[in-house]
Length: 114
Image 1 (cartoon, rainbow, N blue to C red):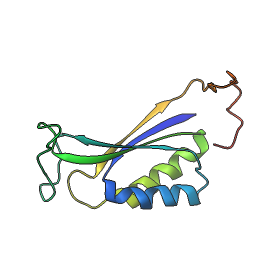
Image 2: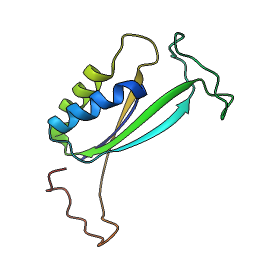
Image 3: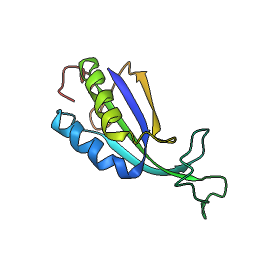
Image 4: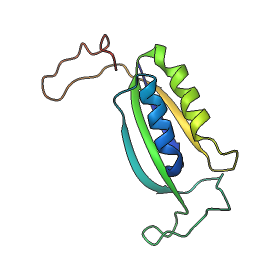
């Protein structure tokens, strides 16, 4: 299993999530945030009132997937997240060695359709 963390433009998030759902990715988490980075979109930079060092609104999407769904999910994030301008975001992929349910400590989740 893999975890995908994608930092994307907030206005691109609905398209990304809708296409992931169409592909059978049901369970994900989304966070709103502000950030700073090397590659920002100068057309949309703004000073943050809450965090003076920040200058870009971001959405962070997190999802854990079976290995067989990772490539298609990356393509969906890329196709629906890109604008061809600096600051489109970044995607991290990490290995997940184990998932455990909080309620029951059930660990045999690898065979479930995530």
